[in-house]
Length: 461
Ligand SMILES: Nc1ncnc2c1ncn2[C@@H]1O[C@H](COP(=O)(O)OP(=O)(O)O)[C@@H](O)[C@H]1O
Ligand SMILES: [Mg+2]
Image (cartoon, rainbow, N blue to C red; front, side, top):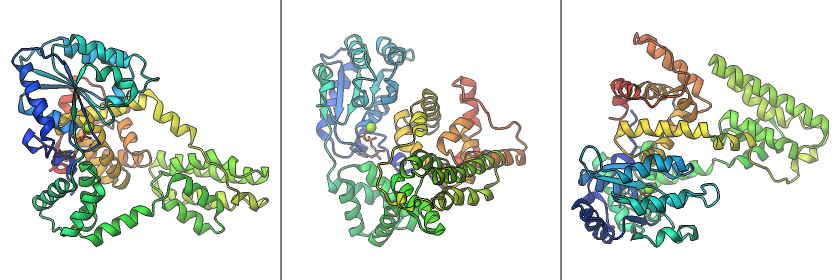
C-alpha cells in the first residue's frame, strides 16, 4: 500500500523539529514575538535565504503552527499577475485576521520572479511591505540576484545554512528507525554525502531505495542508481530511434524513456524533418508516425490498451525503417529541438490553473502548504499516476479530482484511470461520471472532497 511521501510525513511540525538552523531561529523568533505583542518592528518583512531543502519553508510552517498563526501563502507561479498579489497578499497584509488570530504572510521562492515576465511584481511586493500590518516572510535560494536588490534593502535577512552531512545522516537514520527498515551505516553515509546538504533529496532517495528494495544497503542504492542511469534523455531516445538498423533496436530505445507515448510522438514529429531530407523517406516515416497517432487517439477513446503495442511499433520501428532512400541521413548529427506543442502546453494559463487547483485540494487534505503540495506531493502523484492506474483511480475518487487534473497528472494513463474510476463507482453504487469540467473552488466542492475521502484514507495511512 502506498503511503504519504516521507518528505511530507517527516516535515517539521514544531520549531524544535527543524534540524540545525539555530542562528536563523534566534533571529526569527524574537521578530515574530514583537509582532505578536502588537508592535510593528522596523523591518516589516524577512527574507529567508539558503540552498534548497535546508528547511526554509518548513521553518515558516512550523512557526505558524507553533504560534497559532494563520498562514497566507503565495508561490512563484502566483507572482505572474499583479492582480493576484493585490487580491491575496495585499488584502492579507492590510487587514487583521477576522478570527483574531495573528496572521503570517509567506511569499515563497521570490527569486522565481522573473525580471521581464513579471513586470511590476517586485514593486507590488515592496509596496505591500511598506504598508503591512502583519509579518511578511519570503524565501529565496539566491538573495544576491541583482533584481532582488531593492527588496534586500528593506528586509530582515535571515541566512539558512546548507545542512551538514552529519545532520542529514541523523535524520535519515531516524526515519529508518521509525519505519522499521534495516539500514547499513555505509549506505546512510553514501546517501547523506550524495544529498549535498539538500535534505529533501536525501529523504526522497531514501524512500526510493526502501520502496524498491525493502531495506537500505549500499547494494540496493547502487542497483537503483544503475536503473536510473538507464533512462535516456528525450534527445537521445529520438536519435536512437532514427539510427536503429533493426526494429528491436528502435523499440528498445522507446522503452528507455519516461516520456509518455504522446510526448514521444511529439518529439519525433518535431525532429523528423531535421534528420531526414529525402522527401520519399520523409513521407513514409510521417505516414508511420501519423498511424501511431491515430492508434493513440483510439486508445484514449476506447481505453483499449492492447493497441499500445502497435502504436509503439509504428512510432519507433515504423519510423526508422521507413528511411531507405537516403540511409546516410540517419547518421548525420543534427541539433534537435524541444517539441513546440509541449512548450505551448506548459505555458498556457489553463494548465497552470489546473495545477493550482490541484495543489489547493492536496494542501487542504494533507494540511500542508500549497507550495509544498506543488514541490513535494504533485511529483510523487505523477509517478503513481504514470505507473499504477488502479491506485491512481482510487486516489482520484478520494480527492474528487477533475478530468483535467487527472490528465495533468498523467497524460498517457488518464483515460484508463477514468475508466477504472467509473467502474469502481458503479460497483460502489455511486452515481455520476467523472467531471469533465474544471474543479470549481467553491465551498460545496471542498466539503465533498472531505467526505468522500474513503479511498484516500487508506492511501494516506
Ligand atoms: N532543517 C530541517 N529540519 C528538518 N527537516 C528538514 C530540514 N530541512 C529540510 N527538511 C526536510 O526536507 C523537506 C523540504 O524542506 P523545505 O523546508 O521545504 O526546504 P526549503 O529550504 O527548500 O524550503 C521537508 O519536508 C523536511 O522533511
Ligand atoms: Mg521551500
